[in-house]
Image (cartoon, rainbow, N blue to C red):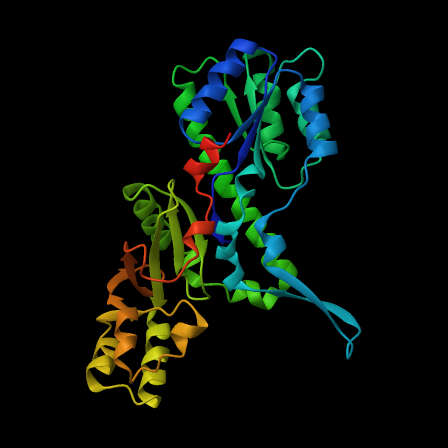
Length: 336
């Protein structure tokens, strides 16, 4: 079974930085803040462990997407995953405070980095170790064993760039891990039927290019086809609408049954436009009504493991959101 190449969502999360060198700690914490990466930093590893193990509460987005019910017929608890609730995380003002990365110095007098990682109880975090020459070989060994996920030599000339790149990759791994666990927990059948594009490197490359070009810092899966809601650092939304060729055919057949006019059917049959209906209210607008045309967008074809049709919509008012309730990344930093 192919693993997910991209998670069900992504947003900036907190890096915990631990190093007994105050100058290094100050320099790196400022670097992260400049790049709008939430950070907690500690010069004492014991203080950091106390926070992680005694104060911090893990509350990933999946907590809002999975519900459980008891099936009395088979006397078991059944978990349900609601794709539509993923993007509701944009209204959670605490989402940026979830910890995804632990960046730990290897050589600290009270507790060295590998022992810190072993004692840290946060179950989903990705671990990065800073090494000097003395601890480098042990860090490599720990990496090969899977005890840590990255290591960086402190002496690297381009350490800031390498660290920023590693943190972003580890954040992606964090969301991929959460997504895999949640989908398996809800249903193995659901896992098999998540959008194929999430496992397609060609689509993943497209999504990342759109994010880079449009300064997107958050994205959230909207439906079982692979469409995403995106936010920039100011919380301004955009929309990546995606459907496979089969999805387009299914919509065409549905529109035909609903008595859609010939020009609408032509747009769907020839894959000229791709439709997306965000709310139940949108869906209630019939294909035979003029108002439905606002939900059709110019389609671009993408050849990956299969053919997809997508449209990237930059109009922030294209679909209904409670914009006033969104705490953007920029607003989060202004409040700190």
